[in-house]
Image 1: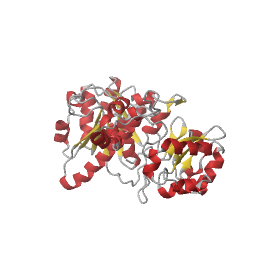
Image 2: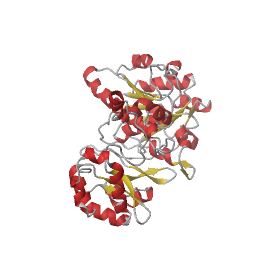
Image 3: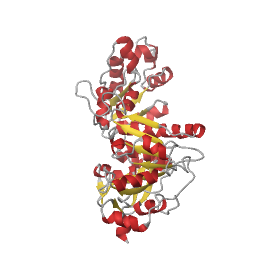
Image 4: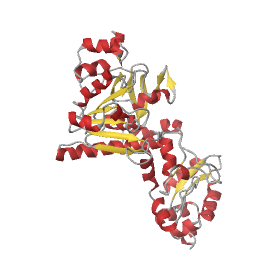
Length: 411
């Protein structure tokens, strides 16, 4: 990928090409993760743009969410419902290693783009399929967004305060979980392909990816009949691990469930005897008496301001922190030192700050080269250079409204 707008680099996935048909969050997040580490990701959008462009805040008419999740990608726009659009996909598949899609199960087959067809063209193709409930089973045809999968998984049931209905985080958590698992599956399949020479299908279901985070509660139900419930800011059976009010009207989260850490907390509170009290001397005992222990800690934090508590507990090597806002994050030197706030170039915005790349690789780290930009920004280049279509054909497709070429319009 030598186009100056998409500078190549020697990331760990350099040399792999990914065709991303997925929309909204889970599929694009999967593609974004692979693009961050050097894969050439070709993002296919509808003519009017991916639905993710309607989400989140905007600046100068541009979707800020899209600027992040579509970063490092070549952006093309075509009509997948047309025969000509699907023919372009078949052309591109011949030269791709991975296909990411998150349509409802069966849709790709209706378009003549099932794995049987695609693998006949490219036997090494890894096809990542993201859906609400998986490619099999009685729920396979149910529509499902991330929050629906979250509810079915049980994860939503344990989120929030016990005296209120289940709540949610103000971000598409389950879509992110699933995109992460999907990218992990794709990389595993690419590693296996080195041995067998063959591709395979990755079946990533939103509800299953969320369910995997219910790990501690599954055997607890099977053996004890225990149904986990919402616990607010406290982590059950891990005490102390809670949010405590401070004198200046804020909150601090303190986690000190380990024996050595709890001793340090007790000493910092000026009550070292707590660690010898039979009610609090062991982790099991502390969890059994969590209400009383949380009350003691709350009484202590209520007599100190937040910054005083943070400094005191940091000196005592007790894990504790305020609850950061985005303003706190932008002001925090650690985020900057770890390159977690990265400025990416953008055609309209000039630059936009996005989350940095994780995890950190020592020798072949990921990079953010360019923010996601306009719909169809790279259509002409990709169709010419990779799909092998002549300029005259591309112009005919554009004139018929079957593709969107920003380059042609600007010419």
